[in-house]
Figure 1: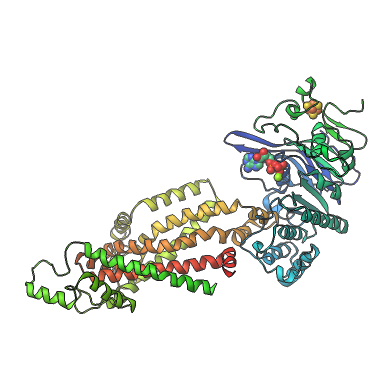
Figure 2 (figure 1 turned 30 degrees about the vertical axis):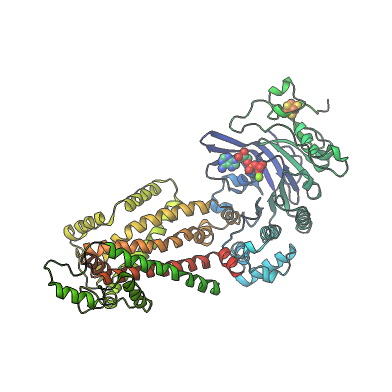
Length: 330
Length: 309
Ligand SMILES: Nc1ncnc2c1ncn2[C@@H]1O[C@H](COP(=O)(O)OP(=O)(O)O)[C@@H](O)[C@H]1O
Ligand code: SF4
Ligand SMILES: [Mg+2]
């Protein structure tokens, strides 16, 4: 099967092909990601959206080689042509933190509470760029300044618990950018934060993207955050890509009923308030025993007989792809 | 932090008072007295002796008299070792016990944590299972069983080591130190394994791995300290266990430590000696626990910080 947006002329930076992630559990195999395809060029910003539990985090964990012990990934994740899936941990370590950086979902627990911020930042640059301690520290202070942490010379000597949630997330962003990665993966970087801080962090990331041509994968379950930062959107449901397109296509011509439902649940400034905040009724399917046909069938308002079979990925000329029997040009 | 520590130190005073009180009255409750040995003493001599040691006074008066002495760390004369004060006996026995105990503690800490980490890093492997199997054995088999087995194997059959005695030589220390440390090694190994596995699953370890650091650095720099925190706080109780273990072990290996004096004292109703040893060890445990708490706080920035405020 062809990835949805393969027509790109430039060689992709990251190309994920037929990615499956499964977890062995006492109840059986949890199919967290199923046959996922997407790709990304240098400087692209892709949003991965979907309800919680749709496999967004595990997708990027698999790419980073950070799955839990009971997890197993299959498929390909080519980064600059090399398959990350086939690499040993030592090989992965030449890319992780240097060319691919990741910002995790939970800023409160993702920094080491026992080490000062300087130690945690300096080690990245010293390890990957061979800087000495004082160069590394100067660089780290500059990075903290870049993410607008006031008084960085003093703050860098503090422990994580002396920072607020928003400040910790800035530290995480700064830490991720220390080695000027080609790809920054941000897993719900703003979810735990209040709205103003959310906006600040998104601004920060888009500024950095413009300045250094860093490609970004932004994971979120909140379509509202996506618009300002990303140019393409991948919508996931039950571990599958159900729709992929430009931000405009997803916002204004969503083809998949699930995407339409997600959009209806986002409060939007350009629509009267009554339409806001109604999440899609029902629950996603059990990942232990996925249904054969369309996985969204139980919740889909447009479900019909054909949906008992697996719907094909449809693709239009504008690189807009969706997995549904409906919405075709015919 | 310093002010807080001083406050905590003052808070230890009631605990010590309680310890002295309990030690004093408990030994008096036990039947028999210091001077009913095999041959009966003439009543007038016994009365004289009782008067000399104030045993004829009302119990409460004796208690306060004793308290007054202990406050200035004077545990009085021994009833049985006629020319000795309890302080002198403690000064005689404690260095021996402390040497064995300290060596056993260090051995237990080093070997226990190393085994625990090895097991955690190879979780659910053959190595892990056999290490933890041995640890279970080490915890459940008591000293007085392990000691004779070791003596039989290493002293009697192999003839590598002396079966007992004490002349401050390393050869003399090996068996008692091993026997004393085995249960602690086992316990610390299990403790370290558990906490290391837990720490390795925490989010900040995932962050460290995502930075591309080699696994050895991840473990040394990021996982080791939090994984060892439970072990540090176990060192207080471990000291207590070592001390009670040493009483048995000093008997078995004929080591002239404080434990031997304690057993002698208890058998002979040597009130002052028994109380002296109990209070001395009690204070030692209380003070060591206090130090362990300080170290724990020092290793844990969150606690350090909260106390600063
Ligand atoms: N270690 C694991 N063992 C079993 N199931 C897991 C494990 N990690 C994640 N999962 C499951 O995988 C699914 C996808 O999770 P995730 O990718 O974290 O979702 P999200 O889209 O919210 O980031 C969830 O149903 C989750 O319960
Ligand atoms: S395939 Fe059928 S059930 Fe699935 S989303 Fe489309 S219409 Fe709904
Ligand atoms: Mg997630």
